[in-house]
Image (cartoon, rainbow, N blue to C red; front, side, top):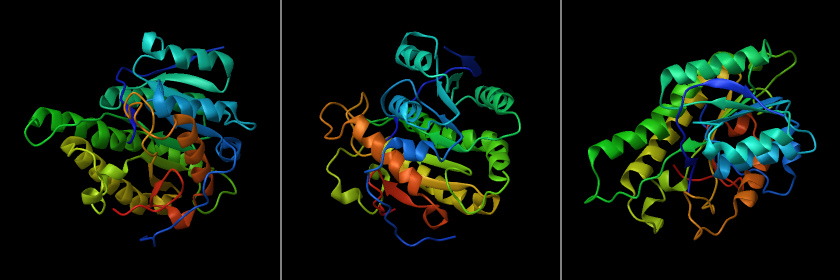
Length: 289
């Protein structure tokens, strides 16, 4: 139903062995390697489990993986980072990064660490996946919960883009790069159809006021970023990953994380200037705002 559980911590690099018309991109069918070949460097937030972990896994295992995969989470060396540690030990392309998306100094330290590693090449693809859920109803809601969810799902991703913007701009200016694509520079915000105002009355889940409102706000952030960053050569898109079997989506969800991520990566490979600012699902279908 959206991004995976958010993870918090400080930052550092750890090395281990214009208005668009509704659009539709090709449905899943190609391997993740097709997308991986398009992006030299990728950073994924909230990558210790669920969708984030699977994104890192499929990118690293693809036939032509990105040269640099920056996998971020709260405590990559702690027990919750065990699956990520094991994955990094198998793929030299994976670099573990401590990153707290609601802690500005942490984001800044992560940016410095990633920038130092990439030198003058810049960051091609930033995937804002970290997020938290809330099932609060009108009766159970309290203001602090609302603020906490907004801090993680809206302010956090926006701060990450703001701090990493110099690296994205650097990548966008790469020699011979034209148009908009993930191979040049892109921001992908993992959203949810539960944030769609147009579909709100047609989705059967509980009100989930903090989560739904935060995802609607994140979608607006994506549209604003797309408008502001287009002239800088940076593509911005919101992606709904489907209702996925994860800790956040529960085992009642109909979609496996492997299938969802395979679709997401195929969609990312098809993105272009015509799809910047779009709200798409994991199959490439355009969703109403």
